[in-house]
Image 1: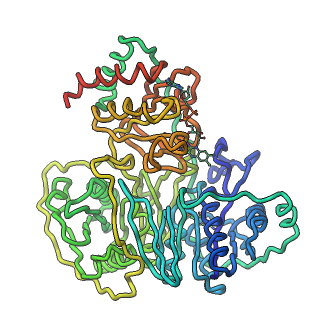
Image 2: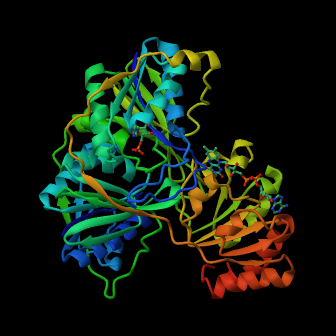
Image 3: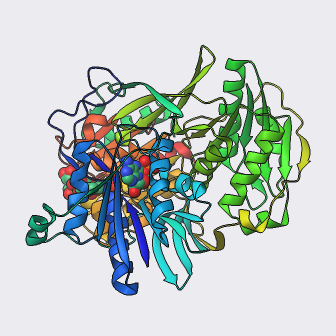
Length: 247
Length: 322
Ligand SMILES: Cc1cc2nc3c(=O)[nH]c(=O)nc-3n(C[C@H](O)[C@H](O)[C@H](O)COP(=O)(O)OP(=O)(O)OC[C@H]3O[C@@H](n4cnc5c(N)ncnc54)[C@H](O)[C@@H]3O)c2cc1C
Ligand SMILES: Nc1ncnc2c1ncn2[C@@H]1O[C@H](COP(=O)(O)O)[C@@H](O)[C@H]1O
């Protein structure tokens, strides 16, 4: 089974966001970058599919030079091949086009992504790649079974779950719960440092969106904090009813 | 601008997101000087859309649409957008809307602004605002293509009734579909019957590790029951197996923006705030006055949840008369 997995690099979830000088992106000074948490589930699923069915796992990243680090992590986790495409674009269509171009060349049976990258929270790349490749897609997958050339997946919906079936090749985006990702072992991390990363030129796709600005959300005024006496609780209920008008 | 509003339905009725989509579409039509046409897929009673001012609605029917395939839905919406010469298509950022919109954008060669919370027309351009970095920042993004696709975050665009209700004129729309458009199909759906989901609730009462064990969540459930609210949870209690995963609010759980969010025994870790900080009113109950949750709370009670929750439930009862 030929498996392609898209992984992106994002700021650590605890990062304090400071807006950069051009007000169009965050200030990257002091920010710790990690593999997008949802992509850990995608990568783990790719490795398990290979362990079960044989084949190869290729990891691909589109990003700036520092994004190569996530490919080192993927190599430490024993992916067979790592592909890096240098691009600073934040436009999802540009990223999806680059990923689709890699898929057109390697003809994977399964393409795995994370549910969303936690920087821009776009939730676009997986269905876009599927559309570009004329393939089925299942997003937010919390359970996946592949039998021969068909798949059954469970995905989260409002107030429940749905079961979806499709045939391969297909695009899957991973939700938490799909699996428990493994950690790389120290010797493998060392070995991964000298493994090759293939570089590809970016496609000449034009962006379809443009960032105009980024700002911090308006700071909240200091809240009204009470003690726990009967009077305090009555006052809170009164304010929720009469001031905030939410109950 | 001509705006196509995709209206979601469930069991033959328009969903709440459909009315929000109409409101967002009409606001944009007003700003840009244009009109709105609705689109439903399958049979549904569209009369209620008139209450929110929608007068013109396409009803798409085709045997292949019964398979609930998002790729066939995307193709149908793309064909409708072309037939109506729509400049903008608006969809809800729901679990299906989020799967349809990227495909639709590719089909229409349109730029996509996902999960938006506000729109403005500046010099003929559509600029959308959306939360990024889990709500820690707001991005303004311009769609630079002629055709545009926008999804809206549920619960943000409050549905507004029209001054005078409109009568909805339904127009049949027959998309041209083939088997190749049906890619992944929904074979079954399991709903948590009788349980309101956090992603759709107006009020959420969430419990965290401060509740000490699953046996104490009846305190959260009874306040939720009194308020007609959904029960939510922090990741700590979901990972501990006290509550189902579907209730988890936060970065790796659900993103919610209810009118009222009550957090009991939740510290307010940044990954929890990521999922709920855009709630309109936040109430925190925590025995530690320095818990970070108080920094974003509009109202707070410093106290023991075991004592505060039952008292709060009693006092709320006298106000809500449910
Ligand atoms: C990549 C990543 C993703 C994550 N995603 C999420 C996510 O989606 N959602 C999420 O919630 N977390 C998430 N987390 C975990 C998050 O960092 C916290 O660990 C978690 O939110 C803590 O849950 P808690 O507030 O219930 O528990 P704690 O942090 O242990 O807080 C318990 C609180 O209860 C209070 N308390 C104790 N006893 C009482 C009492 N009797 N009455 C009142 N108050 C009391 C304490 O003062 C404390 O503030 C994520 C973490 C990572 C690294
Ligand atoms: N720059 C990128 N390089 C590789 N994969 C990416 C990139 N951006 C997004 N992806 C993949 O697409 C998924 C969804 O991302 P997004 O649509 O940006 O929220 C991510 O979880 C990744 O698996």
